[in-house]
Image 1 (cartoon, rainbow, N blue to C red):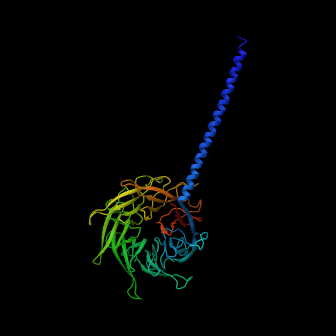
Image 2: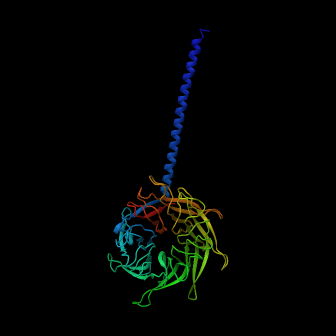
Image 3: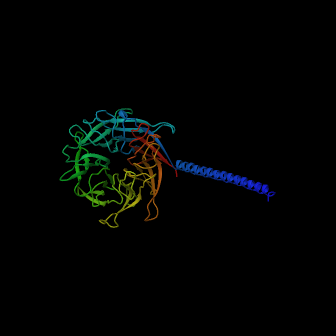
Length: 463
């Protein structure tokens, strides 16, 4: 027995050493496999980022600096035939108002692909003398004049104006601003205009006010401004619809869309479902006839933006709040809706949600209207949500694309861009719609940019 003990001990020691070697090899293999997995994940992330970059490329073409430069563009843009962009900022410009009275600006594209856009201040509002705080975009007439509205101020009243900006006779000259109409302080003709103005072939302007109007419980109007019949004449304003607070849709924010001779718009409040409505105004025998096309409940949300049509006459829009999913601030995330016209005249429109925003990277609470391309895809902005940047608790908004699926299914969503605020200087909180100019989309962000006062961006989508 004693002669065999050293052999047993040696074998046991060898087995122990082999076990240790095997354990070390297993550990090395596990570490290598873990490293490979991390490398694979990193490569997938890199490939995803590369694919994302190839899908959509965002570029800030101008960051507002605040003060006299203007700040906080809330509304969208328009473009002329040369690709120049025009828009408004709510604040900045003249120091006559707290934080500035607002501006109208122009952005001229660069002469070369690598050049910078040139920003020109067309007009800075002075407050009491000519209006303040433009919340809507501007619109062109056939002569190149710009029209828009301010939310306050014109000297005799503080409840809003409609203005005209006429281009200079020679390049480099000064634009001329004229107050076409100041809303009376008693609110009888409406108060606080905002949203899009529409212009018809005769030069009549149409818009909305968020409050005021004729009669009891008035809470917002649709108005018409008709140009003078003589050179020395004045513009004539008339209220073509008053919304009530205690009954029906009320407080329109988005302005109006002129489509095939009728006016269309949204309200975020009232209606049978209490969460707003889509309405139509049609002229017949010299009078405008109002009809509510659809009233919203809690399922889709409250429409703050305008509407868009497809070739079949279906209406599309965005809804803020409510909807199916709750967001980080305990409110809901909003959605996108489709309204289908009745099969026969006088029938009932049907509405449904085609997309719900959810907490996470897809964005939430859209405020602007939608753009539809020739293939039926929808493009828009979400004012919040998206990826969270370093040091921030909530996302800064997104640009999204929706693609139709089979009948009865929700549409497919692609996030084209996540805004980072001032982290990368690309903007934050896009509240408006997108416009398409040649091969790019253009839009605004209310804040963010390099200085935090908002930005104008371009987005190239590559299929």
